[in-house]
Length: 305
Image 1 (cartoon, rainbow, N blue to C red):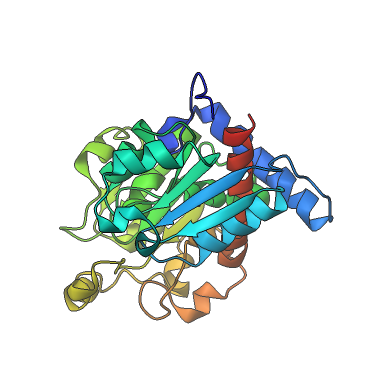
Image 2 (cartoon, rainbow, N blue to C red):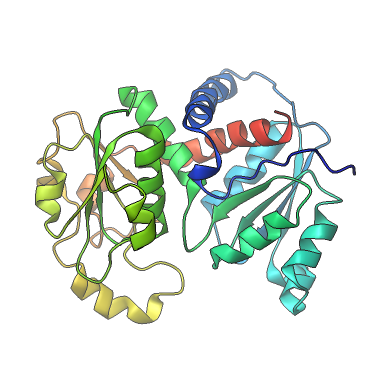
C-alpha cells in the first residue's frame, strides 16, 4: 500500500475545521435519510476498517461494524487478546504493520497518548472511538441529533451536568468548533482538564449549582458518574454527585424546547431519573442511532474524501 501524501486522523474534534465538522453533520443527516429510504450506497467497497478495543463497548462496536457494512466495506474486531499489543509489541510497530494491510483504524482505549502514538506511525486514517481524554465520535452524533430536532446549535446554550470527564472535554471542544455557550455543572474536585478548559474560556463557565446552570439552557447533557476503571471510587463519587441527577424538576428549568442527551449506558436513578430518560424531550435513543450515521459520514470523509 502506497503511503498517501497526507493522512487525516480524527483523534479529537480539533483535528477538523469547524466547516468540515458542520459538513460532516449535514452529510450524516443525509446518509440517515438515505438509509431509512432503503438506498444502497457503497463508496467503501473493498475497504477494510480495523477496530482495536482495549475497552469494552456496545454502541461503538455495533455502529462502526454496521456502518462499514452499509457502506460496502468490512471491519475486523481486535481485542488485546487478539493482537501482539497484548503481549507487549510496541504501539509504533503495530501501527506500521497494520496500516499496510487495512484502509483505516478505529481505536477505543484508555490513555490518549496511545492513540496519538499509533496515528503518528500509521499510513492510514486513525479514528478515536473513545479515550480517557475525549470521545469525538459521540459529539458528532450529539450535534447531528440537535440539528435534526432544533436546527443550528450556533449561539445556543448547552449545559453539561456531572463529571468533567472525556465527554465533558469533547463538549468543550464542540463549544469552540460549533460556536455555542457551555455551562459545566460539576462538584469540587471533578472539574474538566484545566488546559482543555483554558482553550475555551471565552465560552465555558464552571458552576457548582446544577439547577442554576440548567436554567434556560437549550440542551442538557449528562453521563455516568462512574466510568470504566473508576468502579473502586463508586461510593465516593455517588456522595460527591448527590444533587446532580438530572430529573424532571431540573429539566423544567431549561428552555421550554430544550432537549436532553446522554451518551449511554445510563443508570436510572443515578445521573438521570427513569422518568426523564424516557420522556419526550429526551432523544437519547435517536442519539445512539446517530452514532452510526455520523460515523458513516466520517468514514466516507476520511477513507474516500
